[in-house]
Length: 298
Length: 230
Image 1 (cartoon, rainbow over the protein chains, first blue to last red):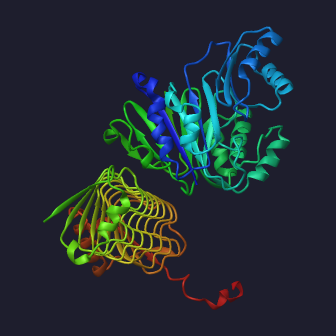
Image 2 (image 1 turned 90 degrees about the horizontal axis):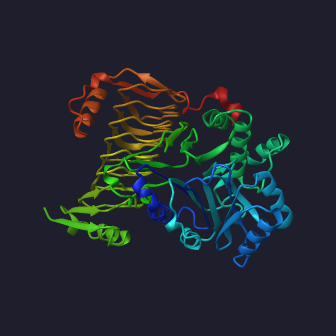
Image 3 (image 1 turned 120 degrees about the vertical axis):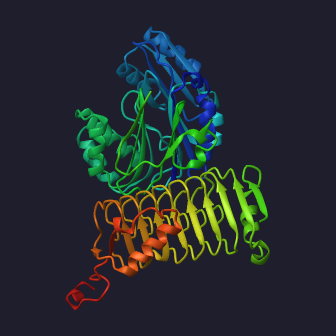
């Protein structure tokens, strides 16, 4: 089991309270995923030539200010760093490839969770409530988000194994289900030059889609290839800079429920995560069909 | 009729279910309203008294599971396994139902006004199911007994490995499962269908607009030519 949640706020007035709207959705999925939780939040974009780097240190005593200072003085470039416990978002105009090399060289203990202009990622072990409190999910502001609560069944419980996973800038994926051919997919993709960070089965699905899109597929074509090659059960929720996308496996083994309202689109594994949303009684609530792709744009 | 209200925002579900499992004699004839179900699992499961329960909203998994005698109405949608293993009584879902609605139900009537998900009526053992909308793939898989009426369409693999349940579909069937075939509807079957349409609020729908499906009976008898397979 695992829980997924997604929220896309259509009414700009509600975007400052997206964190408050989302929090009960995530907490509502605690029984489905009590061991880890994660959230990808799409905020207002940074300057066109800048990128945000979501970093994870593993320890809450990491000196983020020192890293920021080191980065600026060593590379002679401006950067901002916004720490939240053992996570921080580094924003700079330096090109991502150089930033990645620099981080790997000077701070090999850090994990780079995401790169993008809008997306911040926070993920860690603990109950959804604990993780949400640690990173102040409640005060998130933004346009849309993708969240996950994990009950690990196939790989270790670590922050790196928690969802969301990313594949390219401002692109993330969460998964409820399990894949039985994750290891053979991985062997196939590694030959294509795709690098893996964990042995998590969801990462195999994420890297598969990353590979298909690298080969020129749009998301829909990539997912159609996924239906042929991903063997197992899955509900996948994906976030991009402008949209949320959802698919369920052809056998509908894993659940999802959608509420479409003039003010928002909300997605969760179960209705109990949607029940608190404003004016939910007037939302169109429905269950997505298996093997069909649903996309909501901002 | 006496009406009792429970609000799941303030009352723990376990207490409500325990109340509903009380002495059948003293519960008999009572009307019970459950407010703010908000997708909770196991609402009104295991009832065995002549009560009329209304769930005012969306129910989670296994709502009204194992029902006996009682009438349970869900005003919203139902999660997976609504009325699973029902023995008797009536369960009425006014919205849609998720996967495995009415699974293994032995008796009683399950009415779903909207669509039902995959595997509706899987291993049906004698209950009647009427779905106002369409049903997902693999519905009526290994259905043994009972009647299953679908006013909309059916997905893939309808009635796969079916035994003696009777399936009536008004819309299109995407594909039939192994050993399921179209049948000729006789007068007795048409009466069963007409009665179920009437009981489920579809009296205006003509039984003549349905096709009937059932078992070709080639799978569940031992065939000596298959002996090598065992």
